[in-house]
Length: 237
Ligand SMILES: [Zn+2]
Image (spheres, rainbow, N blue to C red):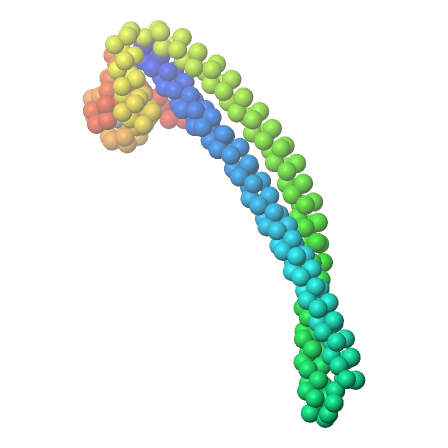
């Protein structure tokens, strides 16, 4: 194969590798962001549980105070039962006591419900906290793994870029400029392979038999008449 063509083929391989590494280097930080975001979300749901437990505690305290008031009201009504002057008053106090009884029963029921809720929330918080600790630990481990991967990608990228640049210097300036222009315009592929199927590996358009003969001889650089990429011949395996 023509030396320049060989260099172009090599350059294309380097540039494909660089593009893949660059995509990886862009993707990995997003993975780290996602790890952090998941942790923030888990913390938020735990905080929401804590807030709910706090509200329940306050509700319970206020219901207990209400119950104390109702209990005191009941004691007063009971005492008044002995002071009434007639049946009408007696009936009125009895009715009042009945109403207070109902109020008390309702208050006690509410307190019971809140205590149950409080207990359930305490359990959920305990579970949530241990789950969060495990998630936090896993997130830290995951982050270390991803950061190491990113470091490795960046190291390899530096090596491949240096190799690529040194190979690129073997080409005459105008040819390199041309190659880079096509690379940019043609989605990162400037050099396309042609095999026995006789189609351009870049754009899949058929190559004329006459051009195939010239490609096989490989004495001059050839461009695809359809997509403008550099072509090289390689028998299919
Ligand atoms: Zn083509």
